[in-house]
Image (cartoon, rainbow, N blue to C red; front, side, top):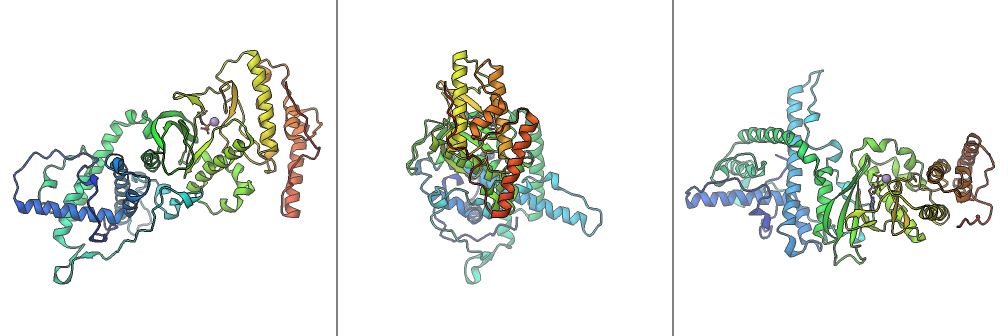
Length: 516
Ligand code: ADP
Ligand code: MN
């Protein structure tokens, strides 16, 4: 509790925002009680103090509310939700701080200690580090950035001379505690306390808070099954907040639901809005790819990014959360390169931290089927094959990229053609394992089309040469791969000796053109 300065906000904090009267947790069912004018005044004071405190704790909320992206008409409902999220997060952090204090108290100097880690509300990686609030992308046009930094006086007292009131004042503190009960979960019965001039001591308040939490957790456990099925719960509170902001800003109209939950990402469908401040046109339908901030899945992806020189300098210094943002950033850059080369792929709309918004491939909320799920006529199958061959060549030569996870799972069939998606792991061909990744891609593609009855489909080795323009002559897979690795090693040696990569592997002049 003590992390929040009581009187830190400037006294002229401005008019009370709409949410003050409309608590998102719902007002506790206060049956009307008759009370004196003094009581009403005290309640008012308690509320004012609480408000001041919250203004101090969430200065960015105030700034955001003045920002260009939250317009007057949507401030009352949607930002209620946002504020609720922020309050909840702050509350969770306080809860954890309290937990840490208790843990310390119990353990003392003992050699054997008990850990309360599992009871924490906020995951250690989620705990705030301010530099995390910076986006990867160019922040000059960041619509969420406050116009000017808000400074918060941390005086810890209000009033002047003999009227001075510090945050340790018993009466003020007690009233504040009472007012804070509003923050408890809506199911938690706090009775009429909030409406009266109750002064709760810190001790009583903390006990109540603990109880409120254990109740909340109990009920959360009961509702676990139900909640897991809803799309919203697929993302953590911070991500939800980002999504709300996107809707709030008018960039998105509505987020309709979840298209896919994978190991590393969750993809949502949304209808595009008509954001006034954004100069580019928002597609009518969008896909929102949320890179999961649970970190385990990403560990084995290290090798893609660690050796990618574009990200080399940054990799070592980053915390896991930033690495995940880097995946999102990589997908954005790679999609942009592909877009510029005219390869059919989703168009990037915006990147916010680990959330990438792009155009939706599909129609009326129905995503285009993956190549593995669609039954094509033999004619379309052949068409798809040649298209993919061309796209792979373009990707390699014009975008200087290897997809690195290309298969019938990451190609969609839409509008009578193939679209490439899922390019966060794509690397440049001179990546230390770039050619191996390309060979794997080629194997997936040629196996799919050979099984699919496309007689013209090249085998994986021919396809590799056709895409890369290299001329590896080995006629069996083992030797072929050995040659690939030798080339990769040659490139690495070149890096060692010359401090830079070979510009390209291909030196055979123009590649052969394959067409129907
Ligand atoms: P993952 O890493 O989880 O495989 P993907 O980028 O492949 O992430 O997305 C998962 C699924 O979401 C895809 O298989 C596809 O069905 C759907 N999807 C992703 N992006 C789009 C998009 N832009 N339009 C339509 N559907 C998409
Ligand atoms: Mn995928």
